[in-house]
Length: 112
Length: 113
Image 1 (cartoon, one colour):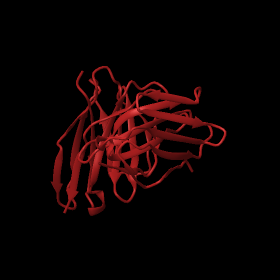
Image 2 (spheres, rainbow over the protein chains, first blue to last red):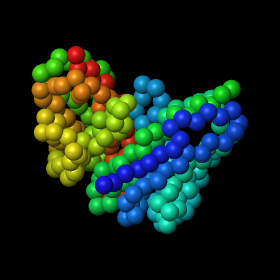
Image 3 (cartoon, one colour):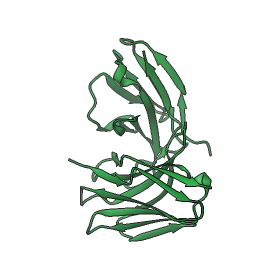
Image 4 (cartoon, rainbow over the protein chains, first blue to last red):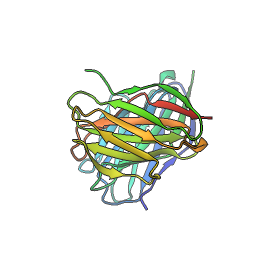
């Protein structure tokens, strides 16, 4: 069935370093991939998304890349700051539906 | 522009009871989806409504049900609560067209004792 694998489950980086989170999806027909940031006690916040007609999208310190052939997409955060500490989820929209399949989440800790 | 509003924020119920959660989407959004979030299972899709019609349903038992009103507000109901229903229930709002962004509310934390 449909599945999204996310790695790593935890990631610790020094402030100012880069962080990369990777996801792999199973349904090759998926064509919309959002990333969410969830802070403690809050709902997931959409931070960036990518559609299958582009390979990369950037928004300030955050970028997402998509490799449709390999069914991989990744989140890149540069110049990390303590406020980037949170749980990050990738997701893929199941084709023909309005159902998102989520990865298992990555807990990012940015050490000051 | 107001975000997605979920009420109540916290709820404690006893096994066997039923509960109703509410979600008001972003103004102009006609699609509301519901997700259950637990430490063990992560984010699991419950169902999605658009213009008062359920378009998609996840793999949850019939105890979980929902509806959407003409103003796009949505409710979900869980009957005969079980301890395993304890979770954060999240509502997501979107325009409802393919590949458009979905925005989540803060969630309702349900604890079943």
